[in-house]
Image 1 (cartoon, each protein chain N blue to C red):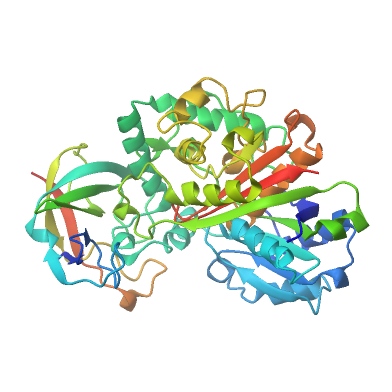
Image 2: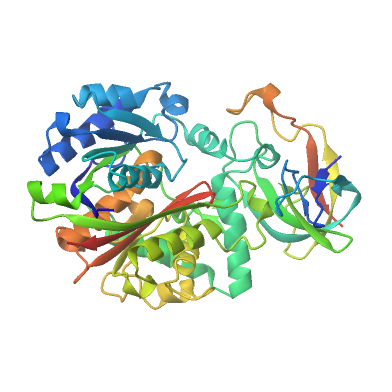
Length: 384
Length: 118
């Protein structure tokens, strides 16, 4: 099996955008083709990561629409929906298409258009992924976060302030990301005094509702060399699931999908958590950064909060987490987020991340979470 | 009725599944509404979706069915709840307004149980 490379990447401005989902897909797709120097008719497979364009906008069939708009026909195309991890799932499908030999050039574009909906409407579209036995109680993804955060703080005797420091850190990182929805710092008092959303979590513990798109170009390493000397390798991609019914988990503070997907990815890449120089984690809620950093093996169980308190996950720390600002600062356009995480690691490993560049970054990891840990994709990447 | 399924290996799940955690089909049911439970964790949601009470206090609770733990999520009848509290299920005819959310109203039952601290 040949090594899989990424030879081009793009992302649009994240935030409140005027265009609709097809406009966003076109913007990122065109920019990625340009960045990779690949002609549209060279694309064999075109995947579109998107969770809910039908529910948000009434637009379906977007994979065929974008194939036409980008003149990528007759490429094979498919839409990948894995809720919030649709982007990561797109990475896995794109990787598989190349690794299997089915495609010599695969374009992945992820996008979501959400901000035209009210917050309650968007919340309900997202909550519709839950099991009926939980949905009928009015459960939302933020309320799962509140339930888990309370249990984590109680179980591991962690201070409430430690969650707030995740938000402070990621907003600080996002200042240097020109694509981020929020490019401003917040202080801890602002986080801790913001309105309660799902007790004990407050407004600044949550990512915003966002429009945006991101894209990646995958090919075999032998083909990559025909286009460029500078590319990034993807030696491991793991995917796994946990219970659909969240309350059935024996330990709600452990995300089995993260544990299993990372085990697969580490094994494929023949590396371990200590080899990772930079990571993009799915901080849809601040508590998720603790859980993932532990379940990926970066820190012992119940110790993730201490790493944040000690500054180990900040820029300049021994393992910078979310140099892009994370979903918290950058924004979370559902289908695009997992693609944008890999975009950030690509930029880091190419040495092109500018003011947010992590020094000597050779190995990077992206962890994309769907639902409340229901589906997870972990991707490992290495500098060429 | 708060129906849970019992499987050959003794495990019980709520809701029931066609195939249980041990990979076998269920062999019986248990009505959890006849039991009390302990609060594992709780939250009060201040940003509820359309058709849902606000604030909406929710809890994950654990029933002990003859030594077998079974968990459930549900609303709480009061905002005064703590981890470790003992609660009992209380029947509610309509947990949220069926026509207000994104789900097709006929696609599922909308009645159920909330948890009342004892």
